[in-house]
Length: 270
Image (cartoon, rainbow, N blue to C red; front, side):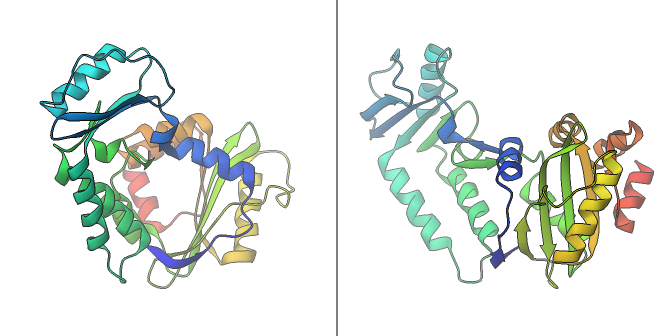
């Protein structure tokens, strides 16, 4: 889905930072207790913020139950607990390296790396939630990787661009521009340049100017979706994306122009 050498240029720092705040969740930004053990013998027991730790266990006997007990004892200062058996960690990283092939798209490889954590669920443990959904840098799209792939296959037109924008008032707060190559792989990842979207006034005028700007630089726009921050959050939180888009449209919180015919038909029926 992601080209091996995508163009990432002319990214607006504010738009990119706001987009990451909306879409990404980093384990490094969470307050966490890390327990590393070898066969149950604890080698490390630390808090990422150096907070005091209440230790309800002296050794690891059941990693999942122990992680929960540690969390419950320290929930006031802790977002999650991770309990890692050293040999399981080593085996996991070997598996990740061995799973790579030169034909992999980078997003497929990263997705597989997270999935592989589930194969070591007794040795790489987090609470609350599984390690594959907790550790690293997580996308919070409210959709699975397979669902995103299916959406690209259904709605992305080859050799065209897609533009996504989030408004704060009538000002663009965040944006994402993607260009799809002939095989529907993403070969451009960037943002709008708000200094060049000079139209001021209504959101639909700004959205139209943004799509025109993208068309002039990256190719014809086949999909443009714009909403406000509250609408973006409602969409990301929704499990039924078609219904969420339809609800945003009915409440005049969505600008969907241009819109591929397959997606227009789904929204009309939702």
